[in-house]
Structure formats: structure tokens, C-alpha cells
Amino acid sequence: MAQSTARLQADFNADAAEKLREMADLLQQQQANPFRIQAYRRAAETVESCDQDLRELLAGEGVAGLEALPFIGSGIASSLQELAQFGRLSRMDRLRGELDPENLFQTVPGVGSVLARQIHETLGVDTLEELEVAAHDGRLERVEGIGPRKARAMRASLDEMLRRLSVRPVSQREEPTVEELLDVDEEYRCKAASGDLTLISPKRFNPTHREWLPVLHTERGEWHFTAMFSNTARAHELGRTQDWVVVYFYDNAQNEGQQTLVTETRGPLKGKRVVRGREAGCRSFYRAHGHGR
Image (cartoon, rainbow, N blue to C red; front, side, top):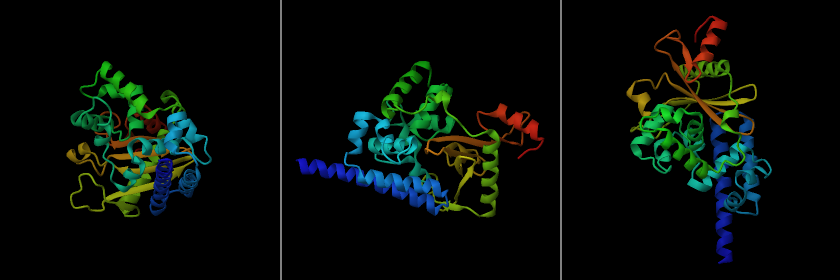
């Protein structure tokens, strides 16, 4: 029995290390920043050499226990936690075009298929971490069928599921500036139009398995960015898959956030690129620079 338990522990750690190396290889294929690639490779070495089963470490010490290991930043620690709980890495699924956020959201108690789709389409989030942020900052209550009581219940469930013991409070989350996001959006759309980006074959809404979705990895200052066109049901229904751009951003600890940029169709910003939820900042930017994107 002891040998069997040890083998299961070794198998999980080995599997986790392999997943981290796969992530590094994928980032390398897509020409991401070498710093990010090396971060995943170093984390894989740490996980592989760890004597303790990472799941036991998580159960006893939470994400903070993982962060105490060499070369395991808070972002990669969150990914390892996701792997331990759900057997998957949503970041890797996304870069492979295999992410299905609607199925993921149905793992939250009280969320069925209809509500999961409404959450995804309304908020544009695709991970449990991002859903938790939306639950705390009030955006979740914009979704039809989610009132204050339902939102409170979902916050409690997400808090328990993610066990976010060491992550900064959502109110203190830092984000890139509007100017940085608009600049990444412009770089992505220009390079996508000129055919200069790696193409992936998304699993969703792609019955012929065609490679059509461009992926950009780029940097601004200390921020690392991944950008791609939105592949949501709503984007397809409205014919906006070549307009809506989802920008994921990472700090040097691999903590992740996201924003969606679109061409505004009404109001004073009509015809300009805007960051959803940060329209006031976009108005200030365009007033200061006197031009559109």
C-alpha cells in the first residue's frame, strides 16, 4: 500500500511537471517571451524534484505552500492548483484552442448550462479565477438570472474552490494602462491582417478544424501579453470574430488578467477601439492624443 501511494504521488508530480513543460513548448512554438518560457521550465524542474505530493501540500498549506517552492510564482501556483483540482490547465487549453469555459463554469454549484453560457457571453471571462474577480467587483450581477443572493452564493463557492489564500485582494489588482492595451490591440490586428502570426485550430465553432485563429505574444514594459480574436458564441452570432480581441496580461509572477477590446458602435467613441469596462479611460486617452485606432 505504501509503495502504491508513493507511486501515485510521483505520478501526479511527474504529470504536473510534464504539463508545465508542454506549456513552455507551446509558448516557444508561438514565439512568446523567453522569460515566460524559462519560468515554466524552471517550475517543471522544481515540481519534478519535489519529495512531497503537490496535492498534499495544497491541502495543508494552500497556494502559499506552492509559492514557497523555488521558481514557483503565484501565477504558476494557481495553475498547479487548477491541475490538482480539475486535471487541466486552462491556459494551455486556451493557447491550443481547446478551452471550453462554459463546461468549466458548470463545475460551480448552482450553475447549469444556460447560466454558464450567459456568464461567458455577458462577461467575456473564461477561467474560474476571472469569474471570481467578476463576482467580487459586481460585474457578475449584470448577468441575467444572477441577483445579490445568487452572487453571494457563487462567491462563497468560488472562494472555497480556489482556496485563494495568498492572492492579492481583487480590489488591489494591478492592470496595464489603457494606452498599453490599445497598443497591443493595434499590433495584434495589424500582424493578423498581414499573416505574420501563428494560427491555431480552435475546438469550438470550428467543425472543419481549420487553423484560423491568430495568436500574438508581446510585451510592454514588465507586462507580458497574449492576444487573440474572441471565439465566443456571441462573437460568432454577431459576426464580430474579426473585431473583438481578448487580451490576456501577465506580470512577472505569471498572474493573469484579461480585457476585451472592440470597435465602439455608438456614442462619442463610435468607430474607435475601446477597452470594455474602461470607456472613461479610453475617452481620456483619445482626448489627450487626438486620434483614433
